[in-house]
Amino acid sequence: MGTGAVVGDAVRESLGRYREKRDFESTPEPSGERTGAASTGERRFVVQRHRARNLHYDLRFEIDGVLVSWAVPKGPTLDPSVRRMAVHVEDHPVEYADFEGVIPKGEYGGGDVIVWDRGTWEPHGTDDPMAAVADGELHAEVHGTKLHGRLVLVRTERKPDDRDDGKEHWLLLHKHDDHAVEGWDPEDHPRSVLSGRTNAEVEADPDRRWHSELPAAEAAEEVRSSSDLADEDELAGLEALGKEGVWQVFGRQLKVTNLDKVLFPGRGSEHPITKRDFLRYVAQVAPVSVPYLKGRALNLHRYPDGSEGKSFWHKEVPDHAPDWLPRWDNPLAGPGETQTYLVADEPAALLWAANFGALEWHPWTSLTSGPERPTYALFDIDPGEDTSWEEVLVLARLHRTAFERLGVRAQPKVTGRRGIQIWVPIRADLEFDETRRWVEQVSRTVGAVVPELVSWKWQKRERGGRARLDYTQNAINKTLVAPYSTRPAAGAPVSMPIGWHELDDPELRPDRWTIRTAPQRIAETGDLFAGMLVHDQDLPTFG
Ligand code: MN
Image (tube, rainbow, N blue to C red; front, top):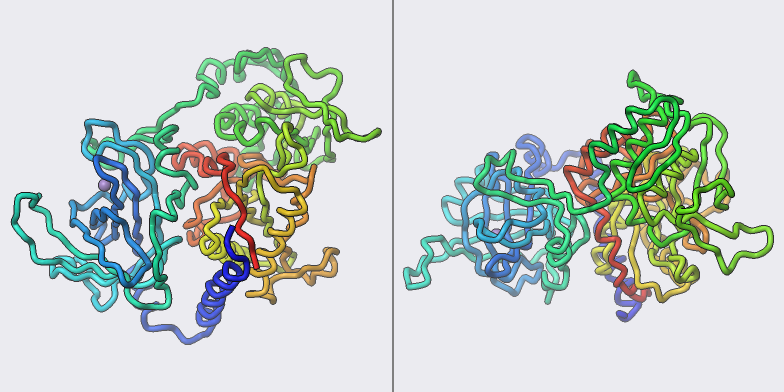
């Protein structure tokens, strides 16, 4: 636990800088630098932490359609007093920028790779960064999640000794600028900005393998490690059923009904979505959705007549439920309260709930093994009637800055409706009162930076159309929608985990992914929420 006041002040200082930048961006006079950046397009940079024969960080800048790369054994730093050795290595294809996974042993660079940081950058003092690299000096203004400010790379004289590998040796340093932080060590920030996972966690359960001998577009191989995946025969079995029948799936016999009934209208000109489509989606995403439901009471939001019909909360497992369905008797339940909850410990249980009309899945924040101890601190950016999507993004980016400064691992997801939620996994040794208070402190600190966007009023009509940072969901039996759950709206949008850098993606929308596009998205990115399954964090004291 840190000293409270110091942590709070550091967060406020970082957020204040954001405020200055926002004020600057909202002024009409264009900045010379920004006009320059716009005319050349956004350039990406990425830093991958790579455990090969030796641990190193690969620092890569997108220049002229390739990733110009340096291997930095001790990693980049914000500490301006430190000089790092950097070995200029071969350019990499831009497709490699998103790669996180395992390079098989025996192949070039064999080991594990995480996307340690990424963002955008501009060259400084030149319009031709490739020429600058050739001349042996590159100045880069970087805007990442961890790295910010001016990095400088300078080629040093090559010393042809025994260890000379024929590669150029450079020095990497961070300028004394507003973003410099004395004593900053990359090894204190070891997790992926994509998935929240460490190298060891990716090694243990990789989503992808990279084969550098293949063309870049084919080099990333998807890895299916989960036994929870419905196979082709099981999916074909669903298609072969008539209006209803018994579906043999995930080792269970599941009675499914009304398969051709429309549950969601189509979005725009798309076809409506039937119950068969919905069940197929649930089977497809079970490997990534069930881990967030396992061991937790599940509150079902049921829409028996589809997303446009009546809806209600259903918590008690009904008498007609099959015997194999996993369930939990709540020892804290009083008379008249729900006694027995569904626990979706296996994919077939989630399919049972889906067939029962649960278009939304709301798992408890605590486990059934300790219902009074939350395993997450939850942030809910709940837009008001007048809140624009751009304003939701401003609030989410402020949270990103706060978590980075606090050193807290957190992951955002779009809700599938209009908002963004951020989940923070924690060690289950706090009470709900404590997580709620902590979330409120962080939220009020963020909200103070942009008071014009946020209301703290309880009643919706008193909020003047402004957003609410809702910390009150941190309570027993209060829930947020699960990752990968559908939402009741046209097209069946999905609550999709995102990487922090995606807050800067102009294509991001809160309902961007639907039942039709989510499986492909998950195949491309892997489960970006996987780091949320590791409950090992203490919340820093916030002053
Ligand atoms: Mn490498």
